[in-house]
Amino acid sequence: MMSTSKLLSPGRAWIPVVIGIIVLMTLLYRYSPEADQHPVLKQVPEFTTVVVQAQNLRLDLHSQGIAAASRQVSLAMETGGRVIDVAPEFKSGHWVKAGTPLLQLDPEPFSLEIAQHKHQLDAAKLHLEEVRATAVVAQRLAASKANDFALRKPQLAEAESRVRSAKAALRMAERQLEQATLKAPFTGRLVDVSLAEGQYLRAGETLGTIYSADEMVLRLPIQDAGLQLLSLPIQLQAVPLDIPVKLSGSFGGKRHTWDGSIRRREGGLNANRMTWLIAEVTLDSGDPPLEPGVYVEVLITGRLVEDLVALPRSALVNDSHVWVIGSEQVLSRRPVEWLHRDEQNVYVTSGLEPGEQVLRRGHSHLLEGTPARSIPEEALITADDALTAGAATAQ
Image 1 (cartoon, rainbow, N blue to C red):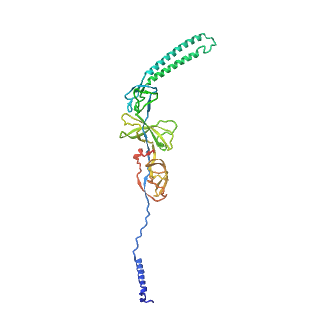
Image 2: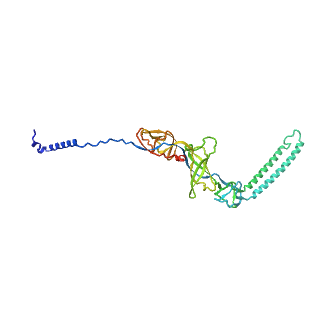
Image 3: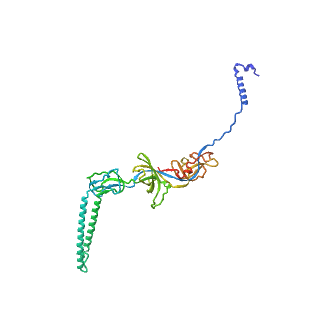
């Protein structure tokens, strides 16, 4: 046995230190307190959901357009002549009533032409009487086999045609005299008038423009898919329309609103699948003015659609699915059919049951059957708003 002196020799002094460390570690491991054991809890993800509620909704459409006068014509004379009188109202910006004389051409050339045609008519009548008298004598003295020329029948027909031609020429000359006075075709406002007294006018020369301010029309672009939200008859026969619209726009530095209606629809679609509805606005004396060229925003009243479910547009996944948290508290991807969607909402017609929880924001990376907990949120459209629900933007 190795003696103590040998263990404590300088070369082996580390051995007792190592033994002491081993004994100390053994005691610490044996008598150390046990750590508390906590069960690992599995975290269930939570999602904000919308409760499915079927409602009867009226889906309106938004559009926009530029107001234009329903009647706008260029003013011109059908005959030429020298201007001898111009009405004070015949200036740009003036309002004129229907039938108001605006300018007068020199009537002398037209009166002279009328006198000449009257003379030609009298001469034609005299010639007709002479031919008739000759025809009576010829028919009395003619042989039994005499031809029409001998009986003066062609001569009589020519004389009668000459009288008819002279009468027509006289009516034309009298009409030109009437047209020597330019009258307002309807009540409206004058624009782009360019005329001076003493000026010589050529037939057909444009003198200005008049437009009616009591009725405006608007050409409204609508997506083809939006037509299903309106009460439009889809048929070949022409059917009058009367769909209410509400217009709003700025004029004179103020915001105004006007009431109108859709009267007809243009046929066909453009490359962007757009069609056009024609709205008419009839203005009364108490209505705010609506001038041509005013930009207006239009709200078109849609038809009432039954049993629609309004969901946030963000709930839709790949245009045809939504995520539903079922009774077993797991995610389920559900195919749905929808009628329309706008910037905020999508309006589902089938695929969901009342009371189901639909994820407000769907994601394509979610997994079917994943446990989930719902945080219910009220539907975006309540029953109180059912008749004036979402707005479909036709852009």
